[in-house]
Amino acid sequence: MKANWSVVIIYEDLPTREEAVKFSDGLVRRFWSEFEFDVGWWSMQDLEKSGGARAAAEKAAKADLLVFALKPEGELPDCFFGWVDRWIDKRGEREGALAGLLDPASNPNGIATQKYLYLRTLAHRSGMDYLMQLPENMVRTIPDSIDSYAQRASTKTSVLDDILNRPIPAGSPKGRSTRILR
Image (tube, rainbow, N blue to C red; front, top):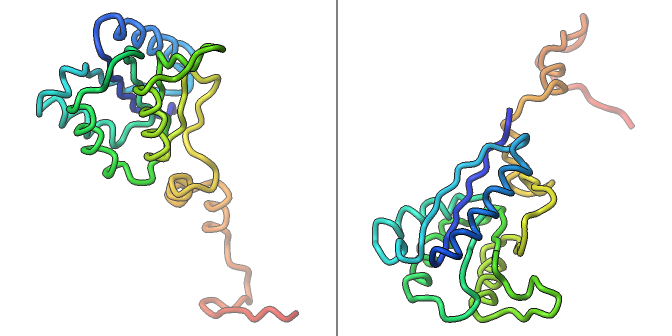
């Protein structure tokens, strides 16, 4: 059974949306055999509307991957900061990644702009990895993280099944603890 990945894509305008579509298509092509994708798309204009901002914030709080396709130049609108405030606290310690698709720093001589420096800070604040391109692989949870412990605690493995269904040997004290001598 494939794992499900929730993806939120925020874009600024038509050209940045086209870049996000390319990224999304590549993501699906590369990882389709391992993951099912639930992708939500919102424009910056959608974040100015209370309904769009609320829906995008709910999805972002639970997303495995947040993708931002923003023009490097210019400033982020005030509605963007309000939108971030709506979901970042709800996210808690949830693992994930934040992708800054058009980050100028992804080029060898490129320098990050204020928008992309903010996205890097946002990734750090929310405990997410920061990506500038399609990853080579995607790992669902970090070993020994809270998420992986919770997942393992609710999974009945063949080893646990064997222990639970093992017959009690004849003559063993049923219901009493056995003292181990050292």
